[in-house]
Image 1 (cartoon, rainbow, N blue to C red):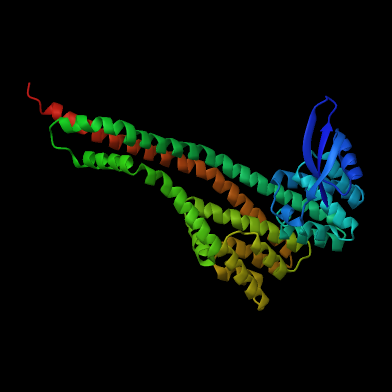
Image 2: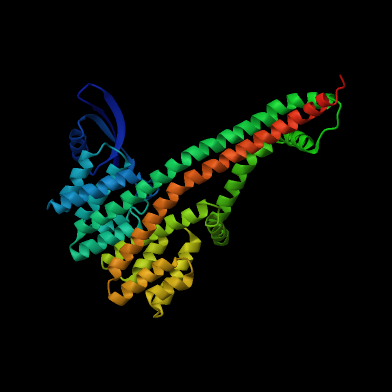
Length: 402
């Protein structure tokens, strides 16, 4: 599909230049008119390949809005193509409008919505495409899109909450590092001659502080370059070696305070997807297979796939989940009750609710836990420096005979 470079003018007389994908110049002009612009000139720039769409992503907020709007339009009886065109024309021009245009063209060419979405895996993941396909096959596309929208919205809220609680501890940590750096690289070098000229024996804790300050001064470039270097090396190694990635993923789950929270977040995401797919009519094995891909942690993914293999061998769901040792006993009991009563749908929804609640409670507990620790660490560092600096001074003054 051609990519047009164009110049437009709006109602206020402002001229702008941009690029847009359109099937032909008439389509380009129509879309710009719907956006409130008059086309002045255009030129076919180049041809965008589908690979270029795959390399780009959109914000979660855009995906939520798209899912909500198409669900509302389809539920209201608006034809699919018209729904997609309405959404495209109502948006400000962005990469996503080009993606929508390619989806419209694919559907007009005979593809189903799910197949058209599958052409853009960076935007619509495997779960999204699979559930849309199930909705098409069962005639419940609007209901499936509603569930998808709620799940994506939950993920967006979870990310926002996690960022919110991390902002203040991150600021405090940065302040601690800046204070320590200032003391070691600026203040201590000025105090060292004074301490040595006092004449008394330098205490051990003072000598340690002086040595640390000298290390900061002599190897400051190592101190600042080593953390990003280690991060880059580990990231590169994890991308190239699955064993390294597996080890690092396992390490993430064991980090104090954050490890258990990360585990709950990953399993909450898995439980949401698993419950949603199972209730949509997808088989347990297929739902587990797709949900495992969404966990984004090789250790948890391996556990889920182990449970799936047990189920495929004839072991009941609750026993399979219990054997991997990842899921709490309460989750296993919920699944057991669901199996005994034949209400597995409700059991999986309860599992999803359980993890959502656990994640929320864990997030609420993190900030009150971290802040006192950071305060104590900062206070301890300041106390050590004060004792190391003032201790020799006090000893010298106390030794003076009046």
